[in-house]
Length: 183
Image (cartoon, rainbow, N blue to C red; front, top):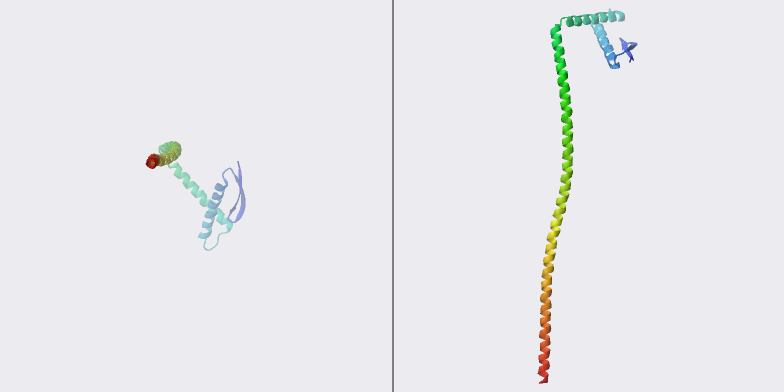
């Protein structure tokens, strides 16, 4: 896919078309503008025309390119192959680490889910414990009420027994009086 990018080189607008990204094309234009600005700054007497500054910039950029190519030529093929092998090994290691990271993330999520389930179970157990505690408290109150009921029942029996005794004693008195009056 081709990208159309509007740029400015040394103040002049251009539209460039290329397969590279817009950001890449803009960064190349920025680099060229920096090189042109360097030429303008180095010409303290302002003898250079705009066109001459652009030509000198092109020569400097071509010089940079040639020097970089020479550096690449100077790389030993065996060293280059070793570097490629190292890069391949590092890429494999990165892939292994990414897979390990995914695995750890999955395990972490499973553990987190298990902890959430345990937390829910604990909450339910805690609610059960609270219910058991309430039942225990109610059981204690019930025991006290039963004890009170037994005491009341005993007291009631005592009162009934006392009342019956009084009735019997009262009945005997009347009889004794009745017998005493007849004599």
